[in-house]
Length: 235
Image (tube, rainbow, N blue to C red):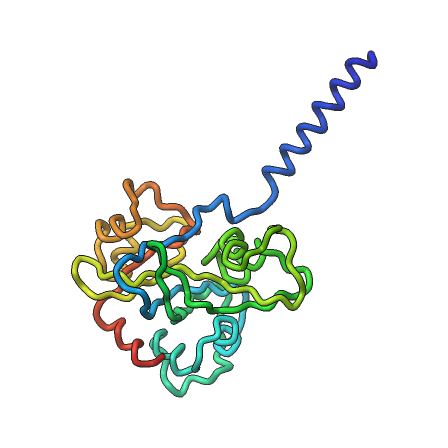
């Protein structure tokens, strides 16, 4: 094999390895960052659906999201008021999380909560995708906290997790906006049926042109009506 051919082969190998590493490097930025439209009210109460990545308890979830009282968490999840704080939450279970929403520049985010303290071996991708089940992206956490280097965070550092939300009325009606993580195999029709809304409303609120554009893992803005307002007096 000639020296020229060897050099050419080595260069191609290095380039191929670089491409594989680049494609394989995880980043939630590949998934569209959740951004809910919010243009009419400055603040409100909102919900997101947290999918627990492991078996845990209501107490741990309350602490993770800084929900002020267990009663609030129980109320929004239709659990009896005497449910204990050590109530077991199974892996992949969805728990509704209430939080205050603040709107600015046409979009809404949680009002400086929750705050997450960085631990050893943490990374922004891990925090976004695993700890907070894809409700935000690593780049959103980076931007919200003014972090210059996506890969440089410090143990003990407090990070604001900017959950998506909205305060807008929908079709002239007051609603509570719920951030729903789309499951694999789901559809606009299925989600609309589950939450008592219409496919057209979901598509309009989320700027979806074609229902086939729905993506697994996408955080969908689902406007809830009616009995969902019962939780407003709880926090």
